[in-house]
Amino acid sequence: MEENSPEIPEYINEMIKSGKNPDEIRIDQEGNWLVNGITFDKTNITDRKIIKFFNKSIDKTKDGIYIIHYNNFIYPIVVEDTPFFITGVLFEGTEHNEKVYLSISNEKEEELDVDTLHFKKNNCLYCYVMNKKYPARFKRSPAFHILDRLDESDDTYFLNICGKRIVLTEKVEND
Image (cartoon, rainbow, N blue to C red; front, side):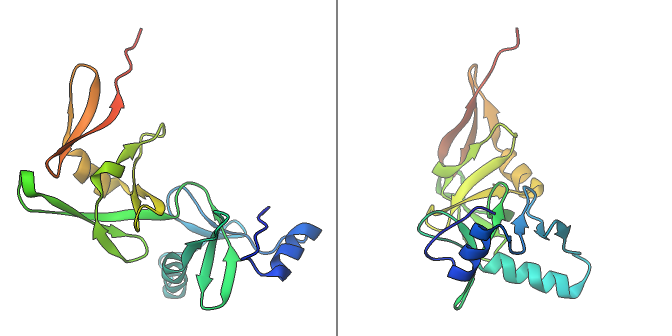
């Protein structure tokens, strides 16, 4: 952990500077929480409560460092990909008056801003949530529901969603 921010408590910054790294809290690219490399057991009720607490407590410092923030408690975390994950989608309305609602890993729900949908090279679907403050990665099942709308032209892949055509990527021709 190499973070150093005025918002992170001084004793943690001092531990990091002195080489006495504090416990590392990490959220991996699949949304699993680990402390010092040990994954929480999702079948254990206590671990599920900790996971729920962590998911609801994610924030970001002014410096862009992800943290667990609860009341006066602030602790830096390592985020491998995104801090939030889309765990469900709900389509409402008709084709031209459609809205898509997202369930987010922090147990919040919000309307999808379709203009923020994008693919990354890892072939995962992403968007921005919470007033475009945070990136979020779609879990497999919600991604498949969105990608049911996938279509293609001669040179692009795109989604027809919420009355818009959202280009996801240009096609790459194989030689």
